[in-house]
Image (cartoon, rainbow, N blue to C red; front, side, top):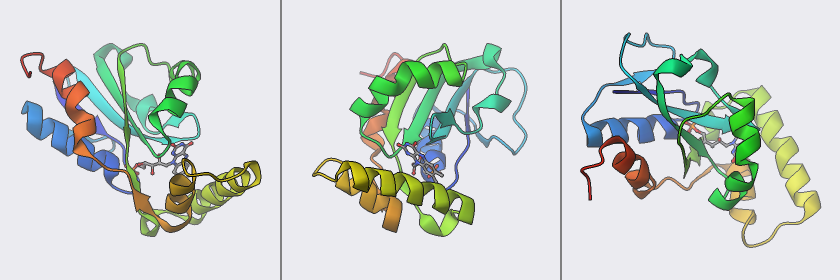
Length: 160
Ligand SMILES: Cc1cc2nc3c(=O)[nH]c(=O)nc-3n(C[C@H](O)[C@H](O)[C@H](O)COP(=O)(O)O)c2cc1C
């Protein structure tokens, strides 16, 4: 098994490297040359309903997908069927919340975030969505490696 990731601002990369270290396997960026053969646990960041980078992964080798995003897990769950369908994923999916480092984003990314933030504000901010709004506008982190526990158990069933 190997871990492969796509990452714009670094949190998917950090999760991917942490999982690879926990289960003792190689970790490779999607655009860095993926070795042939072994099954892949893919980490990809979420943009709208796209799991960025997953199109480049051979579905026959895909063992699990870790989606890294900002939204609350419950909101991802309600969108999950649409996301899986859109990204042609039929293996187990694990969701984890990452970070936004705005210094790594281009104008296009920032424009999308601005549009999403405006929509959120129009719909109304509350104690639940305000931290996400703030992270999109100013940067912020929900990174927490305990969110890897479930995928670690899946990859290495002997872990208690
Ligand atoms: C252009 C853009 C669109 C995004 N769309 C979503 C989204 O639809 N839902 C969500 O929860 N997070 C969204 N995010 C947040 C990222 O998925 C999140 O910050 C993730 O942790 C980034 O991973 P990375 O640090 O590996 O790049 C978006 C971020 C950007 C820059």
